Amino acid sequence: MKKLAIILIAMASSIFALQSHAEETEDKILMVITSHGTLGQSGEPTGYYLSEVSHAYYVFTGAGYEVDFVSPKGGESPVDGYDMEDPENKRFVNDQKAQQKISNALTPDEVDILAYQAIYYAGGHGTMWDLPDNEALASITAHSYESGGVVGAVCHGPAGLVNVKLSDGSYLVDGKTVSAFTNEEEVASGKDKYVPFMLETKLENRGAKHVESDNWQKKVVADGRLVTGQNPASAKGVAENIVELLKSKRE
Image (cartoon, rainbow, N blue to C red; front, side):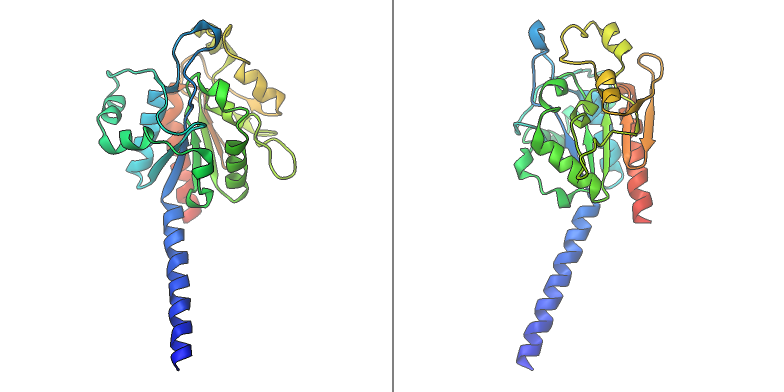
């Protein structure tokens, strides 16, 4: 009887642990930000784009999700688009919990990918330098997607997806309809001469079908469990689509 009691207690503990892990998995989203702070040879500062973080962050937390941050180097990252006229930006900058989290971003090797149901890549020009060739983040993204997770990216965030390969050797974006910062917007911003590649062109070279709106206008595309958006105006829409996909999976 004593042995049976021990076995039952062990089984109950295992079930509780599995339930706790499932609950944790359902309630967490991983947000990827850049660690890079210089716009190529221009010497101008860059980083992650604040509204692409803040707008998505409050969509996710408002839906009941915990958000963790990860970057190639971890810790504090440079920020661009510091517009305090934007209410969500102001809220985020004054949010102690949010600031504590983003200032202490995880490194890729600290990420337990099983703890997250979705990955969201925030943009900002910095992403063009340190996300495309980050093998650890690419591996995390591929594993999450192939495990049924949702992957999202906005503006220059899809730069982090251009080299993500699935287990069959194909690119994640191959055959997918996507939207990202367009070649026209890059030229209009005057930064086309500094970026290491044109994002729209690179995505198309990887087999993606790129769709777009006019410059600076919102464009959000969901292709299965991949959600992408064109520019900062699209960040909230990308986050909302991710939440809807997660809701559908739960139901």
